[in-house]
Length: 236
Image (cartoon, rainbow, N blue to C red):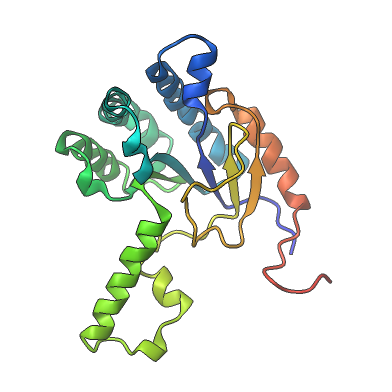
């Protein structure tokens, strides 16, 4: 089945550190440039017909980075939601956050909660930001919830289906992504939306995230109608 526009695009925003290193700048400068690039991409999505955008901002594995880099990333998460709030609401962008948010400092989660509440009624684009997110951890948590329902007698084991597990994922209110884009020339999912991306189309681009422009996104979207998505069915 050929489709005109990917309704849901997911992006692994990779390459901020390398972008900074090539310019002999601190890594934090790369993360700031990446945050500004996200602002540009969010503005472009409604014009391209994209209704859902999900981005990978911070993974459960990113805690292994140097403390000063983590502190810088957390500072961005405190500052950017406040600076973007009015623009996002004006442009009809609803923002939500998924991941193990309880591990974040309260000063960070307060900002994220404020932005989510402020934009809750917006309906032009749904922006989902994955923060302290890992696909395997998400599936394990969903499996635990299903197991608890079985143990309590609320659900029979034989009645568990793919839809049952999907209904317990953090993305249960989102359609599965039609298209997953990864920047920076890497060819892996890195534990991002492992369940949800089962039938997504993929684009791996060499461009580092801060250099990935709305024009680059538009070019990928223009190529998308040529994809034939069979979902397991035979050709023709």
